[in-house]
Image 1 (cartoon, rainbow over the protein chains, first blue to last red):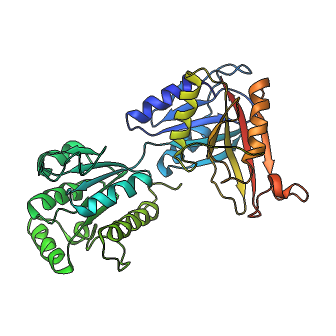
Image 2: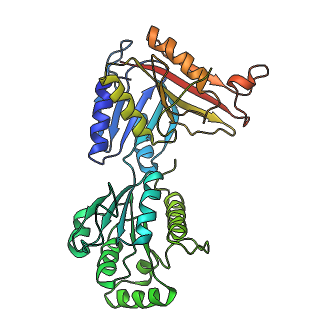
Image 3: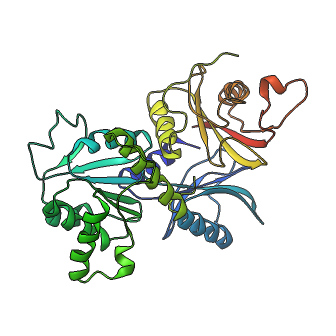
Length: 243
Length: 115
């Protein structure tokens, strides 16, 4: 392992790119692989720059798809291949009381959290110290936030003007989790409105509503636990992250 | 051996590798220990990292505390010699209290110097 390779790895992560770190276990330099192939070699005192067998590259592509780590054996020897991925993201829509509890919990669980609420009086630094805040309207802000398969979206504002544009964008994305706060009755009405906009049953089934696992909790912190629990469940059941 | 760790021992692999980079750039002598394989019940999955410096400061985990002491001792040797080491841990009789895995699993840990 060497600093140069770690620096390349660190730069990939800061650009939110997943890469595979490949390390020969007996001897030879480590290297990085992405979808396009080998991107960088480390140097090792005990061997030159080797050619990378196709079989190993195939394993790397598999690791990238599964987001996992494993030791593999090919003709050239034993290798540890490990996907190094950026942290998952959580977009919280609505700077409400539950958000104040959910955000620090999600940060502890390893999420990079972004809070979206156009109401500047709600989404303040004072109420959400140190949290990345976006004051845009969801219809403009959400597409630029570009939710992907490593992103979860939770709407909490209780205001259809804010929540529903965010849900529409989330449904058009690969977001691995979409949750919407609201009672069963309100959620049913929300689904009707979204159906009228052309979302089919399969799309609407992606929305977890009422949001959270049914733990029976009532306080904002307890509801936040239920949401984070459901988030955790979808993350692993959909195989986004096997760690 | 009593050791004091800092930070989050269940941090993501990328976070520990970033710590290794930061420590190296600060001019510290650094070793990286990584779980290469596991058999049976083991507390941390393949790819879990522990970064160690020459003073024995560390971050991350390879077993949730069961074998870290032994890995840190080996890391100091790896830092001094530059030669990678493969460590194997399982439940051993006399040493079980010191470097065994209480859960009954077995792990292989690769320790290399960060150049």
